[in-house]
Length: 291
Length: 273
Image 1 (cartoon, rainbow over the protein chains, first blue to last red):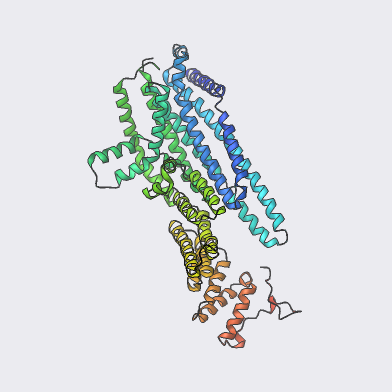
Image 2 (cartoon, rainbow over the protein chains, first blue to last red):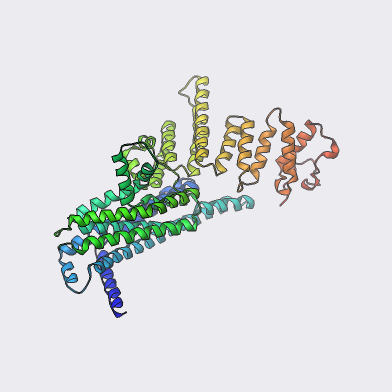
């Protein structure tokens, strides 16, 4: 009991240090860019019809969230081990009775905490801008249609339907799940990478391949008459890389489609399973690595 | 970065990932089916899209950024509209709808720009002295608008909105009331369709030569649905048909409740439901 407690306190200490380190690196500055983008976008889009404005605001904001979270996950996780090796912190930590898997778990949790906070801040910012614009459009509509109450009711319903919908919140949860798996994948790559740059490049490549995994899988399983090596290569891609398209549900959510709860939970669970798998492989690779 | 990992370990790691991947595979396939049955992830990428959006756009679309790329192209299309560059607009709309085929708004507005704005601009194009050519060009834009709606319907067969727009285009731009009636009737057949679509189908049908009896029956059945459908246009059309088709007076509708008793000749008012 006390052993497991001390183990979790060690992991939490490493996670806390990693998180603090990320904050000191000023990674949250990207939030400034995000906020400028969303606010600038919302004022620029005011010249369109409200349906177009809300559609594009949601598309751009969720797209930017996905992009920033993915970049952040890759950059933060890729530099964890190289930086610790460079400033020799890793030797100080691992010379104490800290198993390597605990060290990696602490590092990963630190990055995940940073990603979670980023998702929350970006989400709150985006929803605030969306709600403010919605209120502004509602006010304009009320003023314009003050004389015809029947039309006003249907117009207001249309404005509300086009702006906020509750499915945007699970959509952000799915973006976080995707970023978590990318962080774990990058950490795994960094355990055998020869440099931070190499880890970033490899992770970026895996990111692109991950988006094509579904296509490779369909090619492999679709019974297309091709060379055996082509099928083998497709199978390899489909099995080794994560299916990142499974996490791209926000395009359809923005349109207003209801996200079934079983789809949401299965997608979140898929993200969790991938994160655990990559963490386990990272532990396996890092266990006997010469430092 | 110092240190090395035994290559054999890397090989084992890949093997492990392959095994884990094969265990996850059935789940991925099931999740994909689940997503598609809920109308998620149904948009596909093809080489035609690569030609339309360019390499950078295609890579962005491949990386899961279809929606932002579509939004940026839509803004470009808006810029082209301000300069009345209709050809460029059509090409941009084509790319946007290819990237986001499930967004009804894009199909609908693209069709409206083509069939209404571009058509009007072609008819008023003073650089084209021949009226025949102006009309021909206008008709081509209407056809382009129809094409957007038909492709939109093909991609979104579960939504009524584009059928409604098709009905509007057929009735107002192509003056084909039969086709308009069919499109409105199709739109009205959806569970979540607003009640006015049934009326629009009946109005269009009432303007189709040779189908007066059918139109009368349609209007009457709507009238019998209750106060919600008894709007002034419907009541007036019914009276027109009662006279035109020689319906016996005792079978005429009794719309006294919807008329102003102080001025019976005035068009009937709509009662609150």
